[in-house]
Image 1 (cartoon, helix red, strand yellow):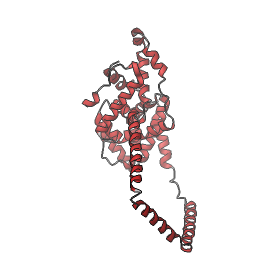
Image 2 (cartoon, chains in turn cyan, blue):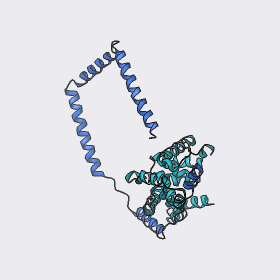
Image 3 (cartoon, rainbow over the protein chains, first blue to last red):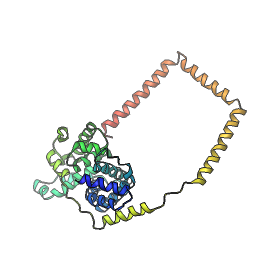
Image 4 (cartoon, rainbow over the protein chains, first blue to last red):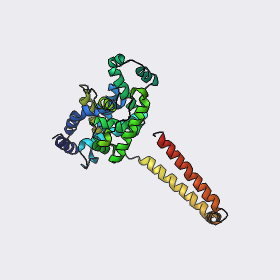
Length: 190
Length: 116
């Protein structure tokens, strides 16, 4: 249904009716802003990046051939915009002392600081080398759908799986004692 | 924290609601781009570049004709080919090629292990 609406709006824009693009922006503003937020952990910057992504999508709309779902194509374009933005200004890496401090806390303290711990884990993902960061971010954003992640990243599924595996290993290394057990293998079953 | 916790943390994130003016702001900028006239072709720069290229091409051609450059070039290439064909040089060349390949493999391995 959503895909149908997208295709109708794409045709409208290509026929010169800009109103069709408003429909696309309304439908996809939240997902694009939320994906950007996962990369930068800053609301204002996420909205700026999503706006740039929509403008790029608008400019490249004629290149959409319908080989994939519109949303897949749109997320691929947005991902390229986000990568460029992150190359210009990367987010700061997670400070190791923040991890050490959380690891040193007792269980009740940790329970109280769950939100802080979770934010630290998410920031650690955002601070990974770009290809692992992109793979993990898109994978979890797409509710662990490996096939869709691979299509958005424009890599074969096997490559996406390898990137996820290595990304998780790096994440464990970065987070040290905060993540105690071995990397999950969920993507291996995906 | 176990792997399931990690999945839970990374998969569940409180969704952000877009600002109220987001759509209007995007549409305003899209409209600007749509109504902006296309960039004119830079004819002046193109003609200037064309003239410079033709002048440089002419000078090079004149030099090549006036000087025995082609003969000298052919001689140099011939000498280099003869040197490579020299059987005394072959082991050294093979050694250099093996060293280069080895260096490349070590660099790739190091980058692979460091996760880059």
